[in-house]
Length: 101
Image (cartoon, rainbow, N blue to C red; front, side, top):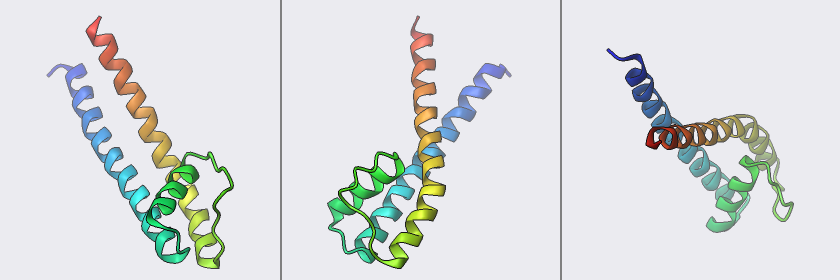
């Protein structure tokens, strides 16, 4: 078995799991902020994205105790997931560009 082929298959599966984890993380954040903070669905999604990408414009923020507690854990867990997913996406793209040459 060609080791490069194994790495590609492994990366493909890891990428799929990371994509699912990123989508689930954004989905959970959106639902929690909609329910707990009473944000609209769009604002809840927006707040989830700007929180996990550490942009944090400051236009929205959690005001309830539960929302603040959730946000601290959401950042600690979610930033790692999103960062790893973006890194893997860039790595895969670079690999595909090198294969075309």
